[in-house]
Image (tube, rainbow, N blue to C red):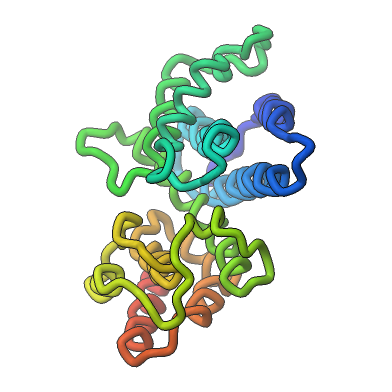
Length: 268
């Protein structure tokens, strides 16, 4: 078990900085709050995962900081492009890395706050994890510390996106195409490329999505990519996979895939 580092100063900075993106537009503010709240839940997930790992204090700190800052690029992305679709705008991971550098967030911020200043090695790992957290695959040659930090962020992010998207799919939440990445809402339609990935127990690609149903199916493929047993345990405990599967289109080909996803969730 790993003790959790205190990053309260960074949390305070994040809340103040993101508040600067709030405007007089209620709908825009809803999306800003969506990402702010998402970030804090991702951080909570990261704390749960890190606590179960045997890692150094530096790696634990890097993982929590990367979880907190993983989506900082979403705020300038939405402010400029009014979308969360990277394909329609810019890569939010790369933009997040650039934003942290511009704001000098890990170097004391623009005000030179010593409580925000991190060791150079931690700065490098956090910036790299933020830049790579949304990549389809991590590149070869990544250090063990960075692989762990990025793995924690990727799992923590997935754990929170499940309930956000399930709420949207069931229309308990926002029905805006900003959240569903402007995909076409067409009943009974999905892309064979997405279904093929699930059949082969591999991660489906955002690039193959055309319909909202594709997004629903793609989320199921995330179960194959979780890095830690605690991530799978949390997903099971929260009942999120069953809630997701209930949103899938009714078709024999789709029904057959549900058990594939369930089996992957149980493999610890």
